[in-house]
Length: 372
Image (cartoon, rainbow, N blue to C red):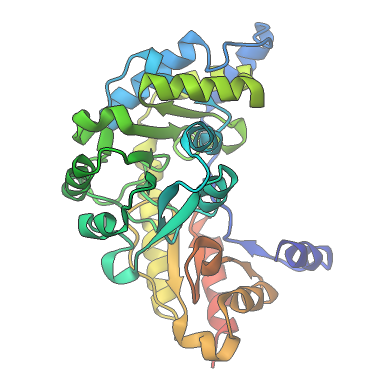
């Protein structure tokens, strides 16, 4: 699909990309200025592997203020993006053949990271009918003697699913009955929650489980800093130390300039986030209404992030599979990602991290492409 999109653009075709998972807003000015100052002041040398002392303090502030997780800096580390943190956690703990429960549809990298670490992926299938969320009972039915981890993403990519505090408390009860199971809570989309309720996360709600919960966050989605590659993790000290050891051999410290920018992001003003969230909510409403108005397509209303998981099952007799459907939409000028890339089927993910006019034009093209 990428090759075909490149070819079409080379032919002069206008392709709207709704496949990218990054905010379309500009990085806040105070963050950019902090990066410039770091360069001017010569902060261009190695730093401690897990981040500077100032970076760890800023990360601890973020976890406490924004996620309700009180941790000392000894239980915090910085990595080159949240994805690297997940890699490090899996490599540090998963032995050959051990199982990791991954709710589906999943973010594309989750199962690949687990397999790279030698683990076995246990899919926990969800559906639009359940808001793409699993229940405590669903989880318990998948836990076996070799279960090592549960990967939990809320708000979720690719579905926008949000787990409420009550749902997480139920999951906590299951974990208490299964003391071997650890949880990686990917909270990177925490600021983009449209439910009106405060963001809920497992380590804050169930502090007695904190010794086996790793919470991953960052600045990529919240502050439009995807290219800076900064992720932060909070978890038990033994795991943080193990992850830092691996990072020392894999990549060394995260970029010193990016760390300075991330400090400014966490310590600086946060009021703009409410405006960004409202803009995304309005875009979500536009896309949900537009998709549901197209014959053969439907999507539930996502409660967070900036994605819709679109069901196109009624069109499969016409197209055969969702990859062919996605290629068909690409030929009509819109790039999306087939659901099968996320462990789903018969649909596609659409990102609404684009301007209103762009989204309206994309919806028009999709409607024309799928006209009977």
